[in-house]
Image 1 (cartoon, rainbow, N blue to C red):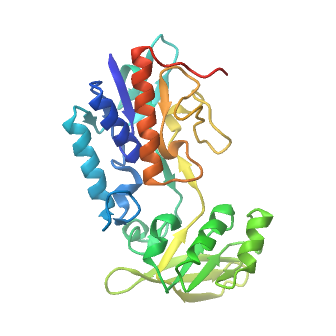
Image 2 (image 1 turned 30 degrees about the vertical axis):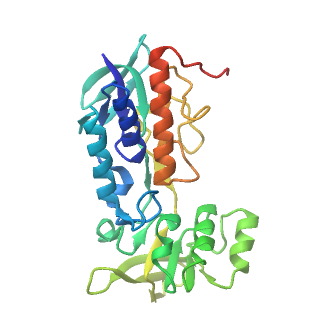
Length: 311
């Protein structure tokens, strides 16, 4: 019987592991199919407190991993597959084996949706990203483009006007799906140029392997043209990694796990942290903070001090 099992090894999961390990709970961390989460594919992180010169995403994850291990956290590459809540304790299936645990911290994150174009994975962090807040400041006084037409795309485009010389908003339809107020702001901004009824069909790189342009195709006329940009911001949504918990825990209509207070699920002993429940911020620091909260709540639960909120 484990005391604490943590699903996920991004900022949320590793922070939870550090706190749980320091509380002598010897947590078991299931790293899953993408150890390190989204930060493992990020180049320079400039907005995580304590690193005035920035730090590479993989290095930040490695530091947190070592810190958790130093205090007694244990790691497994096993991937969560199923959850059984029919017993007196929590049972989690990972790599075809059932793990019994008193508490469970779910920090399995969310995966950005991409276009599925050639060399896409290699370009992430080299002129291709899904987070303007994370990477916008790297692209000052150069043209960039945002792909999407919802509120997220509108917010990304408006944020990028603080840095980029030009923001092209590429949308496959003839009108934005964003809320009226967001759409009006985008259309009123001189720095943003919408490109309607258009999709990106190819990424074009320079001799260093960095993004230099995209190939566009008009879905109505089939006309193609090349657009020079220094970075592509894909804003077509995220998918929370909640497949093992589907039908077992409460979610919102988009599949994100629902949280009460800071980190509680509705089920006793199960706590939630990071992007798997965060539809709004999706930042390393907010994920780390929620991982801290989840671990403290798990510790309080195990010590009998946890007082769940009334429904």
